[in-house]
Length: 553
Image 1 (cartoon, rainbow, N blue to C red):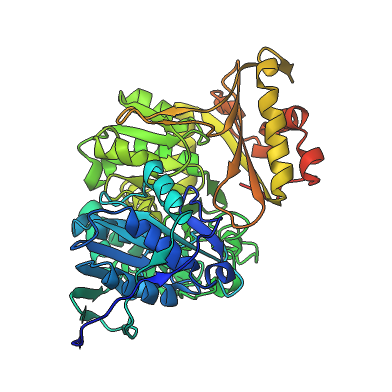
Image 2 (image 1 turned 135 degrees about the vertical axis):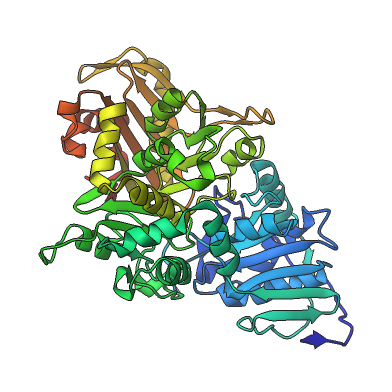
């Protein structure tokens, strides 16, 4: 389709908004907040203003399909044309999973990409919406860029948008807007092809056909078409093995966060809550934009931290990684299970702040091959985002090679490396003033905590984590309060940057147990004394007025 009439673009006057500072994963607000006049336009133009190479460039655009995705893409296309972008590659229907978008940026050597997603946050008319910019390596923009965008949002006075009709987003093919080409592609094709280059699909398919039942929960989110194509059509999973397998703009009214609370249907099937007498051999879920994953066996849950370590320890069974790993990256709150694997393999393990952008430099510099965060995110050097389906395929490939149960593989890993008992407690929607007061009090007491003893452990280090990037030398301060104990146990306090209202306090608890006879404790019981210590130190109940966490994982 071609629009032949010349487009006369007149700048649209606007005024700055004061709340457009991107968080760890871009700008996230309620849908109705984004629908304010000029709100989205201001932020998009601010991104464009920070890209001196924008004119004549190629951009990737797509999102997780949540409410307001399609309307936003039409706005972005009109603005891209007015800002002299040469080409936009767009997922059909405006849909791309976040890892698929990262792959397309890299494959097409694009300047970058605009990804519309609020990840695991609820969708729908009254839900959340988000937007972020990924740079040319396919990864989230670094802090230097997002800080520059924020500065632009505070002084913007006009934006550029072409007065043209909308594009038919569901029609695969090429369209031309004045001098800008829009190429609408199948959202799954390129990503599915990449997966076949990484994994042994023939072996996985044969294993799945040999009385091996799976259950994948797409959570009514973006991975639904990816799962149906890859797990279903290519690997033989039946329709019954892919649950909540449609992409809906409101995620079916559910919370698309793959954890033991929000993936309720999967958990019920894997724990045989309905007492059918049988459970699938393998279970998994992915989130709103397809970058997170949860892994389960029959009657068994695998923590994200253990999942990263086990994938690393078994990477030689996966075709893409048979040449060996260069290193492993993990976020600071993630358990130290991966460190033990790295030590045995004789490779480095890097501890970074939370946020996938911090892995980008390490991946680009060839320092790491695998990376992960405790918040159900795992990935490798195949893209520059965490990747939910990739993690699922890692496990399926390992299971096909080892022909053991998920639980047996995990327990053998613990027997060899020891078990890192680990849990995360989330306190959601805390008034920001209360959350900040809690942190201010904790910060002011850090020095006095060193050397104090709680429940038989003494605190050896109490600080606010600072990261010194070994590649570019940049420093990121205030990345989470750490209490490190003399026996290696840890308590971490963080305020999350992924919500849209109030604050979310995340607490992480970890202790190491080498004795195989002590590997069957219930996790909360094993960590009870650390949980009690956190309350003694921080007065969580007093500041939050919450007697228990909102979510425990």
